[in-house]
Image (cartoon, rainbow, N blue to C red; front, side):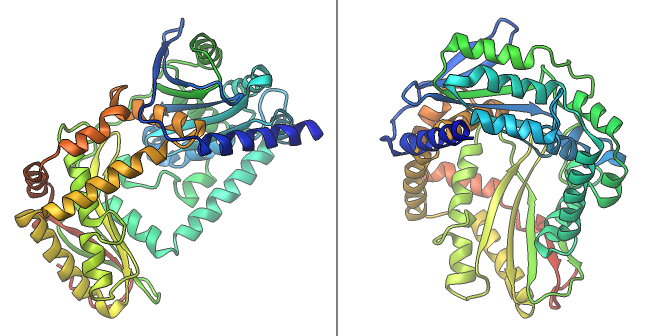
Length: 440
């Protein structure tokens, strides 16, 4: 117990000390190719004796058949709940004794491993990770506990207007494609999953040929290569195909969902722009000026600051691996729904026709270039960013030139993108609860 407390304290100090260091102007990334053929990106720093490792397995909930929706989510929730000859309690105790942090998560496009390991016992900790990756137990009692948590969450979502709005927008936008359904499944599909289904999904989702790896901290390239091969080389090759791309099929107009509540939730948007589009960064900057979720954006000024119609509103470029959309969301008093919809259409049209001003562009550039280095605030953040960069198809030097690319965007570049991105006639609105929305 004392050893575990010391390790936890050391890891906590590591995170704090790293965050306190001066921000570097550049991130020195080494591409590591392992003997087994994996590629990992490493930011080596031996100042603090621990390493952070992130692995993204491409696929996620998108590879599930409809009748097993939620299988990847439930399977992932069980990866740290017993493995090999260790039941859930024994696995947790072993992890605590080593002062390691090992977690798994999933979404519609990926399953992710995040690990934080102290240098002095890295070999023992990586053995635990390998057990979780290769020999999950899927014990009956663990399955029932995890199933109960998932179903409880799904039932809460079913009466949450924000969740309802998001899911209904996804259904309208992408129809029968996996993007059109919840990656957590439904109470019915989750209730039907058994251990055999979870084992099959484990084999399908954690495959050696769909991985993206990032690491940061006290580990040399050759040590990282050995660690990666030890963890991943014996995983199977994918035999479950990825789905086709998702086409945005949302019909323009207002789609009402009855709901009894004090506030109306409105989701809105239309087709978006792919992450690998050469002009994506211009779209990112334009959206930040329009509805990036901060005070001072077009939508926040128009709807909150000038008229008091909402507490907050934001828009975002939803860029999935298989499809994209441009979306926003807000809550308002039911009696203001029609007014809010009119304002959204007007603001959308103004962006399409007039774009943003030089003052808006300058303020957004300053914000984005100033905030970006703050993301690299420790080994854990850096490892996650390295894996995510690979997953999204960035070049290895992107982090060091990204701010220059933003500064190089001219007002003409941004407003050409605004005219391309914004289509007021294509807006799909989902209105959850409240009277006043005119359906068409």
